[in-house]
Image (cartoon, rainbow, N blue to C red; front, side, top):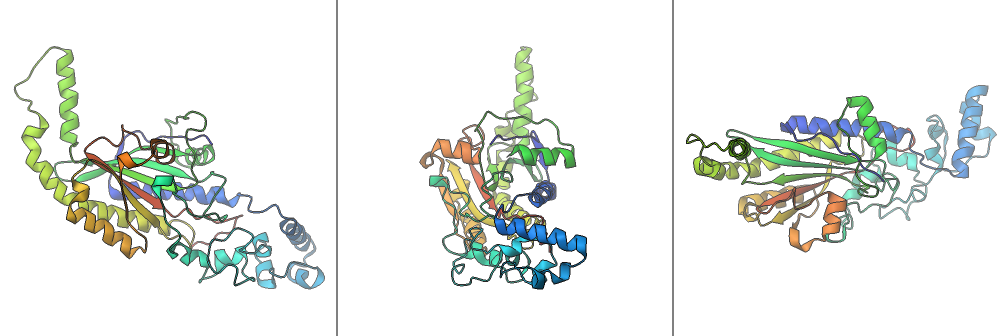
Length: 363
């Protein structure tokens, strides 16, 4: 699958960053309406009967006049959804009790208040493992999204200002199908197509680089120094940023854990509420460290561990050197360029759940 990327280095507040994720979610919802959830005989037969019933006015009596699958009852018939004919087992449901209960349909997973899709992410075997490239532990139609149409990676970084922290969206990688939907709905330009097979994912991931050595002061100083150097000029009024604001960097470091926690809370909330009623928000969190001291400080480590514990999954810390570079590059779009020495990356795994075949299980 080819990928697209756009949003070159745009600075956001947390709310703006979350709004971008919401736009992604809306486009995914629209695309999933046309996703071919089944080509089975049962699905085609039900669609034929539904059409016949609508044209003849006998829709309410189809169940008594025609032989239809047992799972498809009169209540499901009114939805005109063929998902009622397909068992949860048939769509590869990952829930541990799927083999104990045989009368649960794919439609039930979308519409029931106690849907298995609500609790499946809490099972202990649903965890990520970056060492082997496992970022989506599901195989079902709703979360496995094997087509790859809906997966994406948002690469970002934190920018330390004098009085605040901004999150900068560097690139968004996604399928051509999702990129087209975003272009139509958001008028997003500056689209670039990476090389063939450069990007493949069935996951929905946000990576955020945290580098306490780089701030807007550093960037401005570097740019000015570069211009002066090209013109063979010098200025006594410009001092290296590390000389004039090293104390400010240390003060900012204290606030970064709180900012990261707020960011995680808001991303989780926005993602959970902007899609299917069964979507759970963030389902996994990891960090990839490249010789950054902040990630090992108690205040940061404790915050990340507590956040993950409250979400019922395990915090996964990694060192950059221990991960296969082909995995970090292809699966996460993390390289030496966007994970420089002295920084670390947050890897946020979002719930990849979609609604199938036009069923809208909105909250």
